[in-house]
Image (cartoon, rainbow, N blue to C red):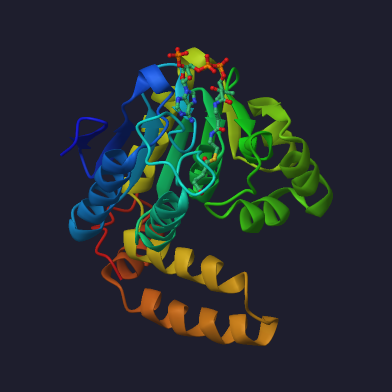
Length: 263
Ligand code: T3D
């Protein structure tokens, strides 16, 4: 795999680290491919029950690589067309992964880098981290799902203001607005993110995967359609070994031992 993305296998989960720290983990074509491959490998491995995504160095991800290595487009600036599709594919993979994806935002998350973080199921960020919808500063619009995630997470007013001004917000503000799950002390970020991911990896994985599907569909469904979908997914969850184990453990007043089979 390209060295710009590192994967560490842990007990029941994988740590995926963006690794181009000298560019704040801005993503070029090989890095896009490596991240997609890492997500695909996690999806294909039934023993992988959660993924933790983070960045090396002082940045999480500064979005698309803007340097001269990118082929110029019609206006002379980097031809970003292919990158739009690659970032979209990364977001699709994260959302479709049948296990929870945690983002540990260790530093600045800008442009598509911010929106890849927002695509994750749970986002923890170091207090020193910043989220920047940097696109407008270079004459672009938010992509990688930004115009979809932001209004849903923080409301139209804040979403439009962040997108239109390119203003940076820090992790505390992001947590206060409900854009991310938690802001934590810089020195505690990785320990907390790893503990959370390990905890998720011990949960009923099939139910978590079904839950992701329900949330995803809910964004476009009527209440009626969502109630029907919840019924179908709940029936599937109710047929799982982990459901049987959860009920047995409750009745026997002991902690459950979920096997974590995927739905
Ligand atoms: O069409 C398409 O969809 C394509 C996809 C587009 C999606 C996008 O993501 S568009 C948005 C692209 N990203 C940006 O516009 C952010 C650009 N970076 C910045 O604005 C700043 O670097 C930050 C606010 C993120 C951080 O600022 P600061 O002061 O902490 O760090 P810095 O000094 O600016 O950056 C450190 C190094 O990283 C620096 O290199 P140097 O001078 O030390 O050799 C800088 O050039 C490099 N770097 C940061 N971001 C990028 C980058 N190099 C290439 N591409 C980058 N995106």
